[in-house]
Amino acid sequence: MRLKVISPSNARLKIARSLLSRTGILRHGLFLMEGPRFVSDYLSRGTPEWIFISEEASPLAAAAVEETVRRNIDVLEIPGKLFAGISNTETSQGITAVCPLPSVNIDDIPREGVFLLLDGISDPGNMGAIIRSAAAFGCTAIIAGKAGCCPFTPKVTRAAAGMNSTVPVIFDTDLAAFMESNSDVIEFIGADASGGEIDRLHGIDGTLGLVIGSEAHGISEDTGKHLSGRVAIPMAGGVESLNAAVSASILLFETYKHLGPVFLKGGTG
Image (cartoon, rainbow, N blue to C red; front, side):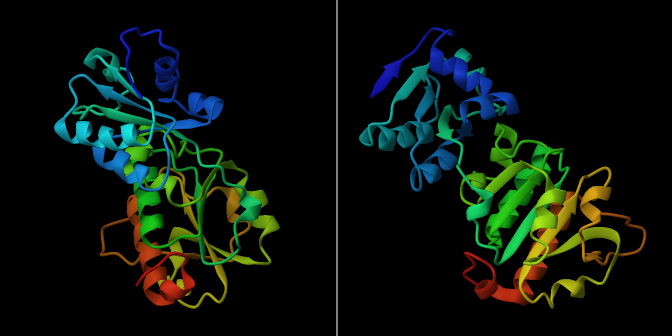
């Protein structure tokens, strides 16, 4: 159904505004997916609760809405000024889907392939780029600690190209406790500029837990206690470190390249 909304006090509009923050996402169990391409991709694998479209939406956004109408998903048409209050982009194309937060039980995930553990990643751009790489290289799951940013804020979703709804993402996790309880089935290796040769990743026999530390402080002391080793990415002289997202992507590619799509869940080679 297509509905016209002009009041800023509309209940669903108020919910959407709250989804710009971690608190609102957790309270409502919803997150925002903005942009015609991301919304269209999401529609191919899931069903939004409802969709907002701006009166000033682009032709691409208008085309994406037609599919939602055919599927009996409510489309709320709102003035551009109201849409700006739920948009997180400077040049919005005028469409945002309100999507259910994926329900993932960490105990139901098979202990196989590669688990990517994020220990304090606080920059949404880094978080999103890491999630996108994790999806590209077939990670079994992403486990984000309590200290980092929420993996479902609009900035993260945009940087992840919507891939946070395709790979299992568990957040606000006690990483040290998870590592301790899974040490018999997962080998945990940390990314560290002072670590050993990257070849350490090539000979993993079983399930790998790759740990990426925070941009500012690296891997925390509590998490570090449960590592069986650390690896460093070789770099030219004069360069001390890489961006967290770049580091994660390189290490995931190295793992994928050597262990291959048979080992990594979802890989196609």
